[in-house]
Length: 100
Image (cartoon, rainbow, N blue to C red; front, side):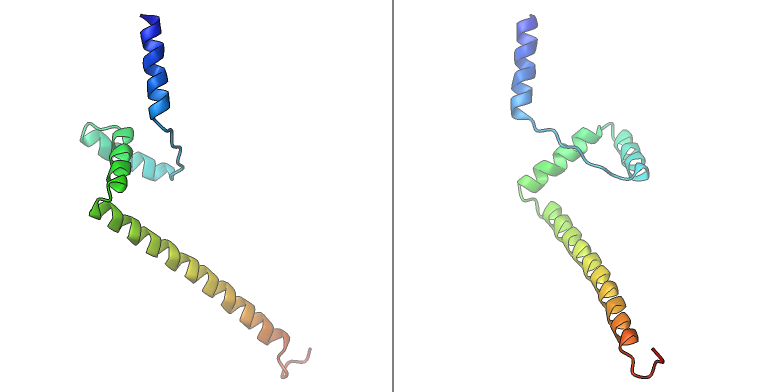
């Protein structure tokens, strides 16, 4: 009996991949609460989402596309703020009207 259990664990280990993610504590609690409402585990939900992405489900891919645009826009905004700061510093350092 012990040998059969060990074999099942080995098969599961060979066919599954463990994924670790970090999400804000509040998000974790809210997602967990939603899972509880539907008698699901977070494992069930994330596994289904992964399968939807792998199967190229249009809703899942649209969510990924929206996330990619949101991430790109945030990067552009950060770069724009950084560039503006650099330009102002250059103008300030090379201002012919200043006493420096």
